Image (cartoon, rainbow, N blue to C red; front, side, top):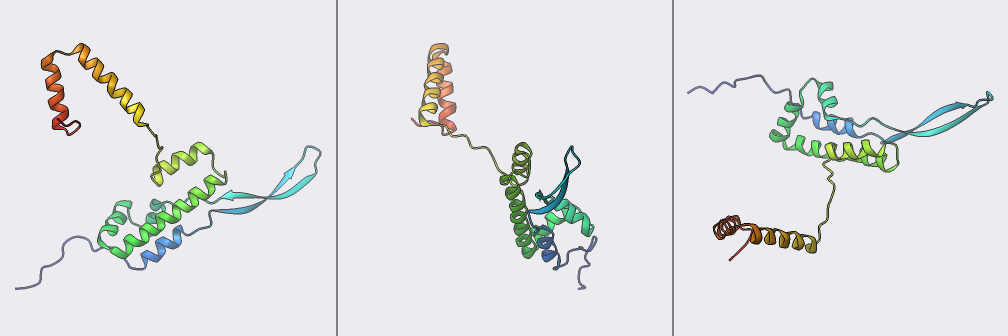
Length: 167
């Protein structure tokens, strides 16, 4: 028997893309920019201010080597070394975003929006047991007041089947 021929387009993956990806994301979060301020009387003041570097994006890196984002994600599934490089790049991207956000180099709303969408930050809401208990008590009171015995049994069985309550 002969060997099976591979079908489809050959992969563009190269092992050196691991280092390329990390280098693309390994940037200084901000840099000093020299500016000149001209006052109303014509005098000029030279000063330096911190400026945020552009956040590196995976789509930009993909574009630079001529692949789609989807292809890159497939590489993370097929090549363990590329997956490690991808995770490191995510960490470096987070460092740029968080460093500049905490230094106030981004507007607070854009920083929060970007952190939620790029690095998965979420708002945390804490609910006390007392709050939950009060809400459950109110629900039970509404059920007791407004439901027939048959409806109450059906609600009880439904909650029991979902593991919410035990007998």
